[in-house]
Image 1 (cartoon, rainbow, N blue to C red):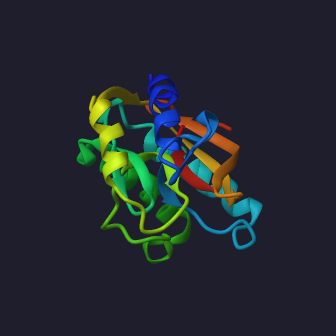
Image 2 (image 1 turned 60 degrees about the horizontal axis):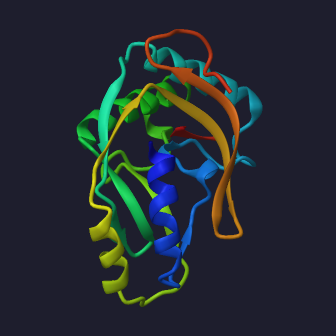
Image 3 (image 1 turned 90 degrees about the vertical axis):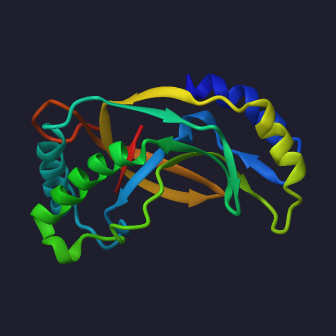
Length: 186
């Protein structure tokens, strides 16, 4: 559903001349960073993956709504609501990291998290927002979605687009290692 929505809105966003649409395969919601790849060794990655997998095993599917789309200085995104439902998933991920490294070594601040799925990144600063808001007004729907897993990924941002390699993935309601370095819902 999100890919179909992105296929509809992204050409119009690109036509504004100020936004670069995110390729469909790279759409994601980042939950929690783990660390830079040159700072986290493979053993730590495996330990964090296993601990996070154990923590999310107790979660059930999380129904959410994506949108309506909003513009901010970084681009256009779909806010994820209710944020409290996503916060519970993020807390489980953070608890898994803390199980391995201790609560004082969990990267990123716990507060201030704003769950969203980015659709397009700003390519210029100081852009007029009226043309972007006109596009968003035509696509004002909220999309239903169900979060069922988290993924541990090795992510980079080259050429103005985030790209990643799946390391492991963990489904909610199951136990075992995270299947497939930032925890993200994919």
